[in-house]
Amino acid sequence: MSIHTEYTSYSVESTIFNGYLAWDETTNEKRPGVLVFPEWWGMNEYIQKRTKQIAELGFV
Image (cartoon, rainbow, N blue to C red):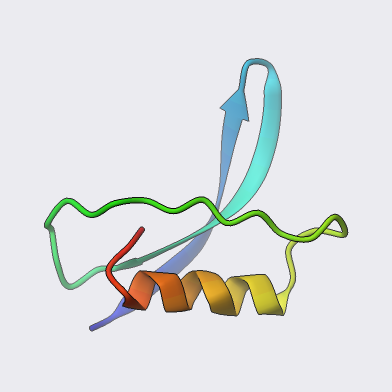
């Protein structure tokens, strides 16, 4: 298993948000996605670690 992570941006209507994406790049199978919201102060190391752990369980 090789977890790839990267920062990304996405928009809802006219508002742009920054995100952190993680997935296992050793498989091309379709996988369910999980959206993880950080605490009110923004993205931190804890949220990045938890996002990677979710990807290790087979989610994107």
